[in-house]
Length: 207
Image 1 (tube, rainbow, N blue to C red):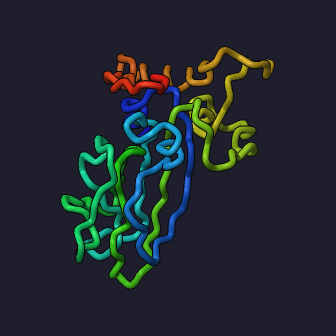
Image 2 (cartoon, helix red, strand yellow):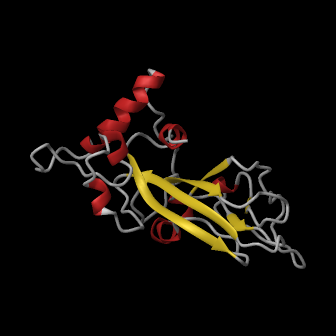
C-alpha cells in the first residue's frame, strides 16, 4: 500500500492521522483538511495527503461504505445535492471485496453511505501527508523508542530530522529512509507534485 502515497506525493511523508472509525449513522458530504481550504482557498489547495481506508466489516451494498464523487478533487465549489435526493449526481460506492482498501486524496468529496446492515460499520483510516504538515494525532513517542523498528518503520510515525547524536539535521533529511526504500525496488524517483499555472489575483500573494 505505501508505494502509492509515495508515488502520488513523495518519500517525504509521514502519518498525519490514524483512526478507528465507527459509523452507526451517516456522515455528510465533505472534503478532508477543511482548515487548509479555509486558509488557502479552495482554488489554491493542492493534493497534500492520501487517506487509506481499511474496512473491517463485511462489504456490501448496505454496509455504509464511504461514497465518493469521482473527479471532485478538481472542483472549486461544493458538490450539490438535488432536492429530494441525499447524494450528489455521479456519487458512487466502490465495489470492493473483504481484503480491498480504498485510497483517496484530501480534495475528494466523500461521505459515509447509508448503513442498513443492522451492524456497526468499522473502518481504519490512515492518512499520509508531507512531513512539513503537522500531524493531526498526537505522536506515540514510545513507538519511536522501540529498538525493533528500523529506519523505514520509524519514518511514518514521525521520526524527526536528527543526526545520530540527536542534533538537528538538514530539513527533509528524515525522509531518507523511505527515499532509499522506494528507489531500491523501483529504480526510479517518486513522482513530484505537478505544478500547474495559477490564476493571478490582484492584491493576493501567489503561492
